[in-house]
Length: 204
Image (cartoon, rainbow, N blue to C red; front, side, top):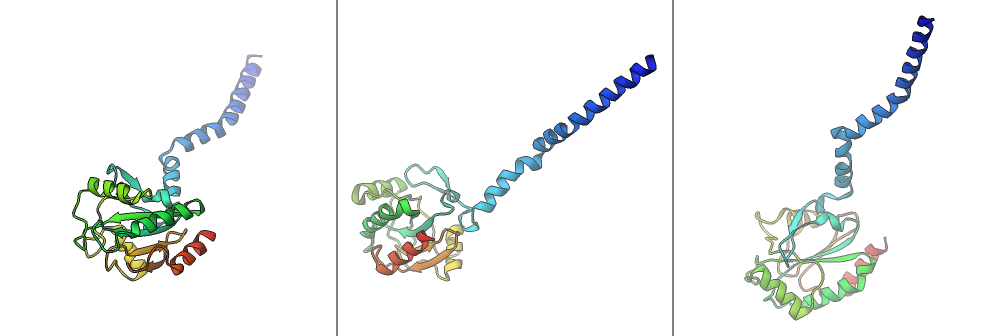
């Protein structure tokens, strides 16, 4: 009789072990380093290489990941406060306001590469807001040309086949995170060719 009871107890224990085994396997898999690494890997895949950079915001110099603009149409512009093209700030802000709900984001990168942006980041931020009411995202002063150019701008130039030749050079980036076109400083934000391409890209 004792042997029968022992056999029954052993059978119950074995069946319980079989029931718990899948649960323990699942818990082990979820707690493994590989499981925790999967979301980061997925995020990296979702963010195109062009946008895998962190830049400091102009107003407070806090780091911002450009990956937050994944899936958007971007108009990337190197700006300056003391240039003949500086009034384009107003047109860029109007363009941003007009198409932002359709997925366009204008990104401004002040640069002293052409010796027309000597002020501090605080000075630039105050100038842009008070003079032109700029609300589109802007970043701290950035080197946009030459071997010391920021890696983001090196990739832009590589994809477009041209680096900025002057202030207010414009790169248009599609939702896929690749340069779709580039426009010189003399191309105003209201240029029909630029607007037509923006409308085509946001419609995709």
